[in-house]
Length: 230
Image 1 (cartoon, one colour):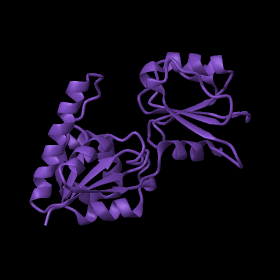
Image 2 (tube, rainbow, N blue to C red; image 1 turned 90 degrees about the vertical axis):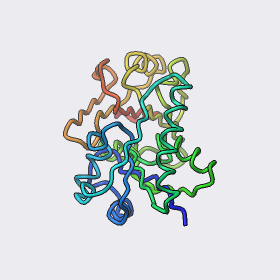
Image 3 (cartoon, rainbow, N blue to C red; image 1 turned 30 degrees about the horizontal axis):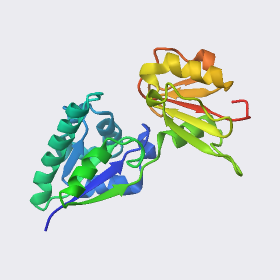
């Protein structure tokens, strides 16, 4: 019987925010896939290891998925990763692929999942705490109340667009283009808060747009509310 590929979210950074289900899955399975050349150096591994020390005894499967805008290179790496995972599934072994946040939100796992499913294998998603929920909790603010809308943007792909007038805007993956992201916020008349490396020892909090540095890192998340001063 063929194995199942699990996409398990490890949350945004704080090991205490890992779900019991994700912890149980790691403990009960022997093959753990991680998105990187060196599994133990990945952020997902470091989060999981703090919550589940037993992961060090597992077989760690490196799935190299570099960030590149080249479509052919991306697709090549995704296929290689999928085939690597499938070799275990064919032998009846389940594989647990760890991903930051929730596997349903801008996850690298999705690319592998689609290929593996197209090749006839089963996959399952194990939800994790999304980074924007953790960031809102850290700032002690609601993302939406009553009839407010929530808009989620991958900021690096939204540099030429405008932000909506109403609702809460969440800007993810802002780091490399932070200067332009700040300009868009100011043009919209919105203020915002930003958390960098939420839930980790490197966490930084910025309470206004003008405080946000242009050199912010990749794991930076911006929350901009419609009317509240945050």
